[in-house]
Image (cartoon, rainbow, N blue to C red; front, top):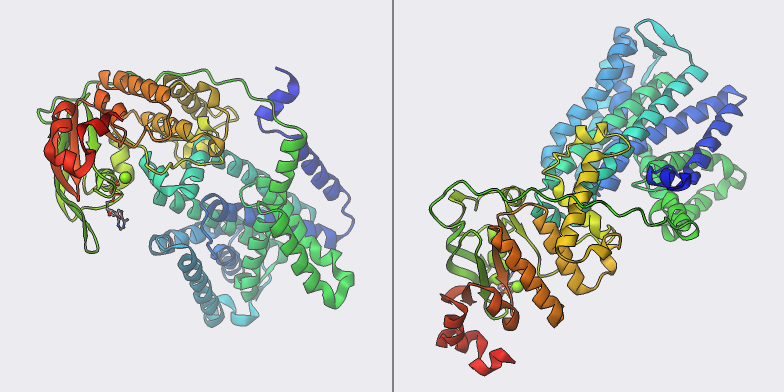
Length: 597
Ligand code: ADP
Ligand code: MG
């Protein structure tokens, strides 16, 4: 392995080094107090935007609260410093704590809302805070604000204004950038990505997407509080301006312009937003127009921000050499389930309506450990709906679902997945931009206990992520598609995508596997191959429920079959019994000779 490859695999890129060098050169060429302050403000905005990237970029939610959290951080420092004379050793901590507490309180109701309502609700929170700041004169100084905030003094040690505070701010940017980099890469980052791009799939592999969103929102507010506090110490005045909308607009612009998920995007965006007004100053009254046009241009040519654009160019000019394939790591052998006398899956009298339509009208079925059950029926007979009820995507109006004797029908989807029920989807649910390997590796999230703190503490090597990828490589081999590991899932043939979904489901070490039309898009050889592999999995004790229309595939595979029609089980039995059943023939199969066709 040569040096450049090692560096690339560690994520250190020539462009990044160039960028950091640029900042250092800029910082050391500063010759006036004004320039120094400008550079400090760039750092503060970068921190603010680094935080905003968590909720906006990584969680994909347009939260318009970041400016408000910044304002709260600034006011906490301002009020405690001016009114009570507290040192930064206390005020800094409280400037972080208060925005986080505020975020924790507002998140519960607000994070449930869908996109534009979410944005509106978060906007409302900002307006309330602004009114409080204006109205509560005794505390905040009203519209005059508070002046005379002390410099950054911690336990009597004073960080000098000018250069001292500039270095302190950029030190915080460096730590914040490193933290963000660690959190948003690896297993936790992959979990964020699948939650953002395909929440249904994320929950189907046991990820609590709401909890992830909550965590990113708190992180955003933490960074905003820090940026606000540093701002108060730099400018030494707080007024209602810190709570007003332009701060939020600036933050949003930075993320859109620089890039919403790249750490470097926050910094480049901050550099631009602070300097663009300077660069465009000669345009005078045309300034706003030029600014708007530049922004629009950036959004059109670089939807992933300028850093996203640079990344694209870099990938074209210096394509990464394929990294060495991951050494497969076998999953632990299936442990025998604690003895339970009944079936593994017990579905009882499930009813599910959509408006006037009875999609499931009293469906009961059982699957034993290690059994392969075929589920058939005409289109619209309720097969997929039944899978969605079992996996908690839909709630049934009545009936019960038990897994190994434990009721699961009131559990959240991600909990059902974690308890050992894995599935694939009739309409493929992969993350197109992720490699095949990572699409599968992310399903190891629950097993690696890849929480936020673990992510923050993980070093360069990301051991949990490497193990997860090793497991993914093993599963790809188990399905005979190891060669696709490094391809992006979006570009794969349909049949391969189906196998990738099966591999992802198996990564959950399930006791029950639910497959929704797994043979669709597979040619005859591939079907035979898949059937063999499924049989082998069942031999290890895995119970499999297969929905299929393809009888030549299903009949030799399934030990038992259930036929649905209009949401009712019309027959069950061995494949031979099903094939001969007049009800099944009338509703679905047609005359026996058609089956062979
Ligand atoms: P199958 O998988 O057997 O082809 P489905 O379970 O997808 O059938 O659908 C059963 C019936 O329920 C169909 O009539 C379908 O239109 C209806 N249906 C399924 N999902 C929904 C939904 N989310 N909203 C309304 N109707 C639905
Ligand atoms: Mg279906």
